[in-house]
Image 1 (cartoon, rainbow, N blue to C red):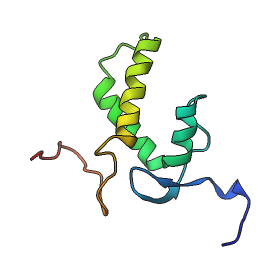
Image 2: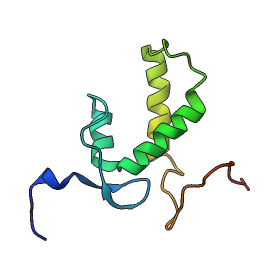
Image 3: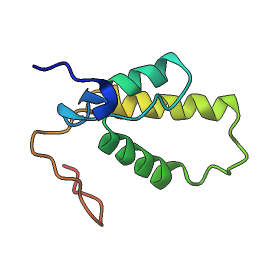
Length: 103
């Protein structure tokens, strides 16, 4: 292992994909959770989360960025990356289009 400078980009072992992937350029929030995301979540997983957020939370009016909603979003975020079903099965391919079938 050569220890080259971080300039090549920040790599994380992604909690979502369970493999080494490029991480975010910087923590998304100025909090412990933001740092946790920075250390454990890949860019791709973060994009998935943002899509999930848009799909699910778009009904929240934009001006409602009050702490209560932040709490809701944080809960969603922790569940998305660290909840029981957070880790994707090996070889998972994000589905395009319609929702998957739930058994």
